[in-house]
Length: 404
Image (cartoon, rainbow, N blue to C red; front, side):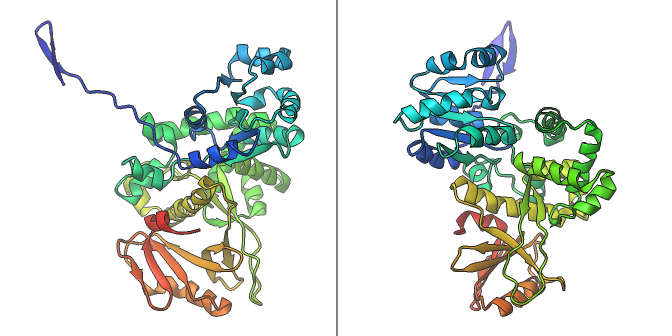
């Protein structure tokens, strides 16, 4: 739009406000129709507050980060909750743990479903407090960063894989247009200073940050706590504790090995993946697409992206994660095995754009052992093929249509 003021012509660029529709919204509504309280957990800045405000527009919203609100809740918890007889959204509720004992009584005496909606960024403290006072009374849903399905529907999905890996999936990078190179260091700093310090009294945060960077270099690899302890300069128990913090904070995901061994000696350590590729790229010092294209860990970052998209697909539907990996002592490995109880589906992930028959080497080996016929190869190329021997070759974004 062209405007003129005092003889000066200038252009006004309208600000476009949008809200990406979250797939988890349907499951959140479903849980609120079954439980008297629902807890929305997930990493910092995944859009939890935005989602609960959107779904429960009629409920009062209260953030316990607000000092006045928090003081009222801490000094007079019964009076605070009595002020909201029809329920409310309590955000950052772990900041006032005394509320949970009083919430227990209110929920037990009420027949109303979806009365209170609980949310918080510090998942470890939130879940710990809920399990102590409200076990069995609360429905849980985890909200992860955007999925490719959500970005595609909003027409915000980057056209090429390298741009997507660098940009990641956290909402502020999209709805606030914050460049990932600016957003990531501030996120890490906030996470360490707020969440980590609240969970565990870590005296040397510099050592903890070095540990996260070392872990980023192992994304897509087996988790070896002993090796990490040596490189970080702390003991193994400390490493195990820090891994637990990162896992409960939805920074990393530990993909467990599949238990079926087919008379083979199999690896029993989990593989570690970062939920977001922008964070892992930043921690590895990757700042642009040219660096990413030639980086030795590009394949691992691509694999992380695909694995976490599979996780999001299950999580957004409120389903338990049924994903594993398989590796024997001779080096044969299947990147992902989907275990639906009655059947197993092996998935191989390749970052290359050109299909090669060698991509099926490990799948063929595993299928011969297991007797499985169906298998899927997810890669970065554009050709999709359904072969007669049960092998399916798909561009990785076809995850959208996969039944897990």
